[in-house]
Length: 326
Image 1 (tube, rainbow, N blue to C red):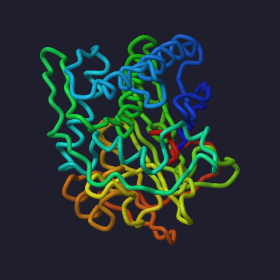
Image 2 (cartoon, helix red, strand yellow):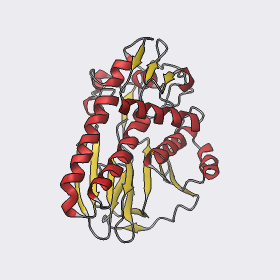
Image 3 (cartoon, rainbow, N blue to C red):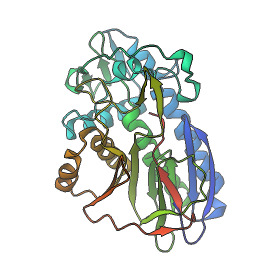
């Protein structure tokens, strides 16, 4: 998704967390301070939650092999968010899918994946499930059963978008939009008419075509998809979203799912859950009362809970798309 606003706020985009980060502010003079906040948040979450850094806190936790580990405050918050997502989705979005994601071949950064690195698929099988995580929140003490590997990618990037937008708006006193590869959060006073968000399958695709556009004034929007972060294994296309019940990609039903919610974390949790649930996602989103736009593999669009009919404008809006790294 790519955000755009009528008042043309100041904007900057750059590579971060294996995807594209975008920052928009309604006051151009606040960009330097807002960028500093975003950079700090990105560095902190990378050090805490990266699967691809041997020195990250997540790597230390996963390497503990059944021993109790004391974790820092940011990692504790990210774990709380991941466990809450698992609880509210009945385990459909679950942080114990680390072994399954690795088995599918996503054990190095997506940019570094090469065909010669990808051997045959050996599915890890069903994940242990979030209830297997021994977590003492008050003491910030974590113990994983032997063989359980955490992957916080389904929620940590969305949490970073929320944290960065809230902190930057507080520091600058202006409206802020943070978009991390499809996980988008806004805070502070929006521009007139709200932040316009252009929807796309791929945040990195050329932005010349007209795209469906929506406006938001608060909260977040997230898009999860199955057509961008893909690679080939044994004649099939594989992607980064895993069904914890099988350890494999879910049956392909949705190409992209975009959800609006009170926070980016809530939106991303629901959009990821929808990809895994397939057709059952329509009822789930309606029961939760979450506006959503779901695009089937053949391009058919389903709208639920008041998501507006597609309004296509030229590419003058901030973009929101799938394609963020987990």
